Image (cartoon, rainbow, N blue to C red; front, side, top):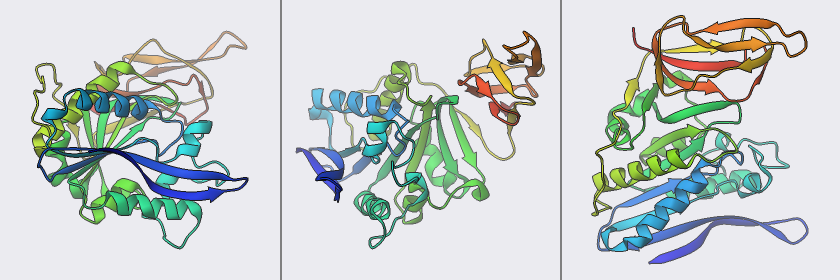
Length: 311
C-alpha cells in the first residue's frame, strides 16, 4: 500500500483549507509501524529533505519493507509556507499545545488529531532543526524518565550526541512528552540550523532511520553501519552553556562536532562601529562542542555555544 491521506482538515477564511497530510507505505506481513514526524516549526526544514530521501530509498527497495512507515512532513503546513516558526495568525508554537483538545481552537483540534493518529505506533521519530540562531550536530534529546527505554533505540540512529534531560526541563505540552506519556515511544531528533538543509546530515539521518527500522524488524534490507558514529551520551549536569557577556557581532571560525580544550577560542564579539574586540570567548571547559551560534548578531546573554564536559 502506498497512500496519501489527511490527518486533519478544517476550513480557513476565503475558501481555503488547513490540511495536515501523511504518506503511508506498507508492505509485507509485518505488523510493526514507525512514524516519521517533522515540520512542527515552520522555520525548521531539515526534516523535509529527510522525509524525501527516506521514502525515495524505501520505494526503490520496497521488497525489504516488512511493516508500515508513515511520514508526516508538515505538522504546521502554514508555518512552512510562510517560514514562520509558529502557526501564522495564531501566535502559537505548535509544540506547546499538545495533546490538544478536540473541542478547542483550530490549533488545539489539529494537535489532538495528530496525537490520536500517532498513538499506538511502535516508534515515533520527531525530527527538528535548530532555530536560525544555532547550529546543532545530529542529536537525540530524551527525558530522563524515559531514558532506560529510549536510549538503546537512540543509539541506532547514527547521531553524534544523545542528551538526556532532567525531568524538570521537559515541557509537558510537547508532542514527544504527550506521546511518551500514553505509551507511544517517541524520540526527538535535532540537527542542523533553521531555514536551511544540510544534505550530509540528512543522508546520515536516513541511514540511522533505516538502522532503527531494522532494529524494530520493519526493514529487512542491508544497512551499512561501517561509518556509523558512536554517540556521546550526556546525562546529569554535564553540559556547559556559553552565553554572550556583551552585545555585538559574534565572529567565529570554529565549528561544532569537535573536542575543545579549556581556554580554546570559540570566537570574539566585535564592534563593526569602532573596530574593537568587545570580548574574547574562551571555552570554559574541556569537552565536546555540539552547539555553536550560527547567527552573528548577539545580545548580552545570547547563547553562543554548548559543550558536553569531558573532565
